Image 1 (cartoon, rainbow, N blue to C red):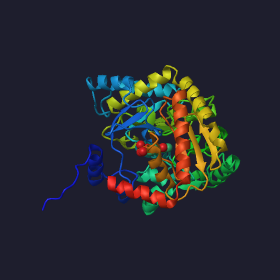
Image 2 (image 1 turned 60 degrees about the vertical axis):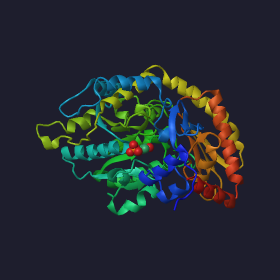
Image 3 (image 1 turned 135 degrees about the vertical axis):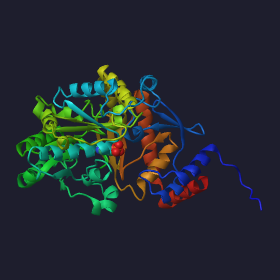
Image 4 (image 1 turned 180 degrees about the horizontal axis):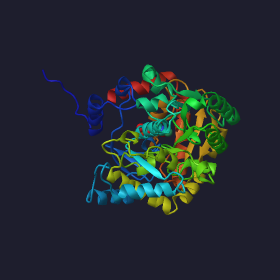
Length: 459
Ligand SMILES: *Cc1c(COP(=O)(O)O)cnc(C)c1O
């Protein structure tokens, strides 16, 4: 018997094959059959193009990694040149110029306060490194009982077992909870609640009781990203630094999402205006934007004091952690090209772009279903009042028709675009978000079910 069927378009073919062979991240695959992944053929600047020539503005910078758009000529040139010279060499027993330069340049950006850089590959591996270095440095200085960690409510630090233990996001955590090391979870600051003082008081209470057993506190500076772009004041950062110093607890500042200029400074921590080395964190983790969305790379910056705790004739007192691609030369070359942009005045451009976004989205503040319109540099977010069932998915799908690639977190719509915003792009984004919002809110549950069943046939 022969069945008669119309051939699939390339777009449909990639969708079908992807759902069959690729296990997609952060996705219930049963759902991916209903809402198939969008095959992207190429990218240019802030735009992504599918196989049917449709384009989409990458409003979340491909999961917060892309800083200067897709196929940026400068970053590509740096990678290509490194590719022809030395793509990779192991960083134990060998070294290479891109890693050395990158470490020096990042340390200089902390005014030398964090002068030692350890390389990883993904964000979560940097968090693992910081947790291990903190505990091990206490152990090496005779305080092995300091082995507990503190994180903030709704905080996110990655999804490997150690990083997940200091992550408080139910959907990622719950299934694995029985496997996880126990961390203290403390009230987080949230400008919407105006609870910064309470959050600091809760931290003081915990540190004064358990400080002798606590190795480190880990936080996301200024914005808790995965929590739904929860923003808070830099005063909390200063208060927390003082508490960690008072109770002799390390402070790990996870800049994986908010570093690299996203908040308006290169490090979000700079909003705390550190005047002296001891006003910096003990650890900073970086990843995501550090290669501008080209190559996986992460790193941990730390202090002379932590470094010295490992300095010994005894091998076992050293930090023997490693990943195969640690300090990959291609990734380091990309990161150096990213730093070149910041040396050339990127922060000034970001300030202007943040202003353009601010103006374009200002009218949304009076939308009857939008609450808490908020912004920190190149992060803009608002909460939807009564978003309804599967809001994030419906918004994401409806936005595609307006040339916008965007993924709300629950009922929070946010933009974290590449640093390529001009007046036209800002106006485009504000209009596309507004149209999508009104469309999705006026949809009845019934018609959204129809949209989804149509997608099944497309797949
Ligand atoms: C994304 C993220 C991580 C994890 O990085 P991966 O590269 O996804 O492992 C850790 N911390 C924060 C704050 C992040 O946003």
